[in-house]
Length: 361
Image 1: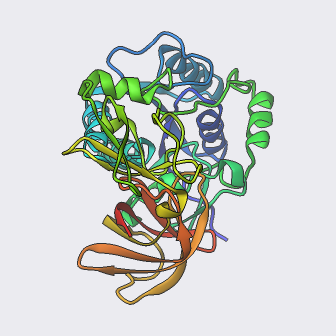
Image 2: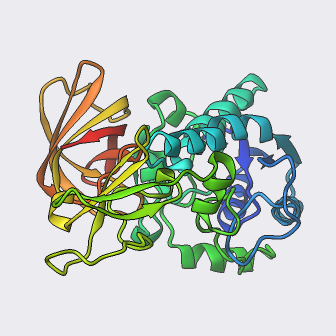
């Protein structure tokens, strides 16, 4: 059996425990590893608030300390302008259009595996390694063994070419095992809290973040069953399909049951609410499809499963490509399907394709 070739690997180091252990494992395997921290904000906060946010000065320092312990070169790449354009501005414009984007999907697509990978290959590196909890075998992306931490969904936007230059060293380990290993290796981030929520909204208040950029604009909240105005809001962008809390409705529903957001119309600035049963959909159309499975593109319907949000429920379905779109027919109804989210297709635990949800019926 021939030995594994020695690769030049760029290890993306966020300052967290996962990326630190990933870099350490690649270096220990005998590869030529260089660590890089991505500076994604032109004015980073000095310290995070608990587990909220990331990409702070603290994170950059933690990444540098981890690289020193591992014994690898370390650099900081300024990606703030690209990140703001491709992730933050996209996030704001999607909400302004009545959609619900997933910025982690967009960051993986545009920053970590487009801008960073392109630069890495141009500099002579063979691959980029990250601390994502997912497995990669033979170019096929698979779920992590740690179901609770699986991140294959947010990597589903990657192309076959990008996956061929990616390494995910943590996919066969649980988060508990990663933390224990970090402690044994003397990495100070062993007990550092995971970052939650949207990294560029450190306080977790998405509505306030959007209001600051889009401004307040009062509009009606309309009951779908009666057509009556049952409340007002200060911006339709502050709502998403399936939302139940924070509606501030003036009067109870005639049936006494909770109302949910059914639609967001940015042109008329109208939010329509109604019963949960009105949220159920069976047919989904996705735009910008990516087919990254081992088989060819499905121009005839195939049986598979689909995940419609990060850590969301998985649904059996039939899917096919047609006219540059991905058409998905669910075996049973799903509720709260929002345009702008990702639809990631699986065969078993293997990712075979993805698309951005354009509409659901």
